[in-house]
Image (cartoon, rainbow, N blue to C red; front, side):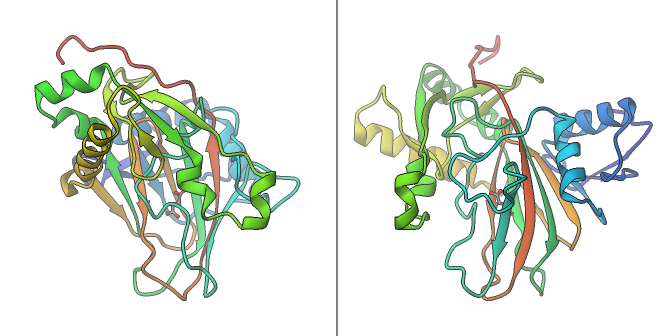
Length: 282
Ligand code: SIN
């Protein structure tokens, strides 16, 4: 694809590109917006360096792509900005958000289309990377009989798996833990491509199968998602931004920096109900 208003540098042939020539603190003109959107569709996750955004500018950039999502059970840090999810780890952290492979908030009936993470503090020695995986490739590289079998199946995604045990016991009664059933093979609403949509972070079971069948099949798919050829690994610097498409990627946050500090804000763009439209070829 030829871009006029931005420069797009792929970081692997499969997934991920750095975008240059954009100042995210400024409103994007129509052409730049369209090209950033196209770069996201082409590369699944895009990265920006050396950005300086206020909370309002971060939210404005997110809103260009759709209404902003409020996390169902993450604590609200800024009362006037419930859409800001704080991503923070320090010497008191035993876990961090997103340590398990996942697509954000897939427990929602209408999970977010994308997430935009802006980190202002990163740990030393190159720690705290995020790894992203291409779910189109995960689906496309399965055998034809496996693809056929998955086409008719759904999976239950449950917030208790991802969030319940991480929440403070005293907060749980006040919190919501949504769950939702989604097709295992998800058709991307923009590109029309098929992707695998189950994750170790959120998926509980495949209701059409017996429990031991569901456990075995899901374990095989989770391990498949971990295939390095589907991945890119992003090395954060202060003031980097990553924007990923939750409909066709999963990610995994590396927690290899305890007791150091890592800090940033995420805005999350609302999405639509996942659907499966069988393709002609699979
Ligand atoms: C997340 O949004 O899952 C966290 C990703 C990260 O901290 O790298």
